[in-house]
Length: 81
Image (cartoon, rainbow, N blue to C red; front, side, top):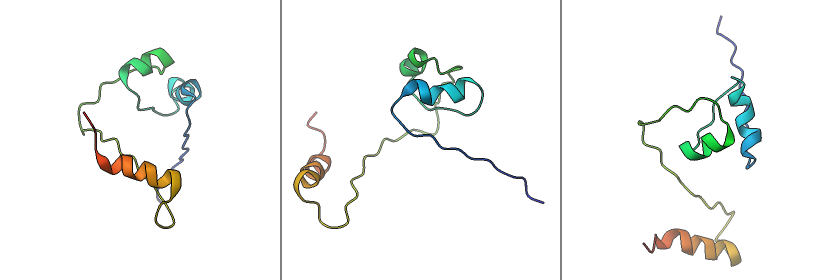
């Protein structure tokens, strides 16, 4: 008989709310080291592999217009630096 798997996913911008379950031993949070320390995220473990990649996506039901088109242009233009 397969083992039961529980899963809860929490997304948001309130760092204290995101870190509280992890600090209580009920999950993990992936944060930059300085943010983790400031938010009281519990035990910080350095991550060296795999390399993390940040990705920004724009989803649109058709060709983007208005603000979405402007954002798409900025995203595809690349970094000016």
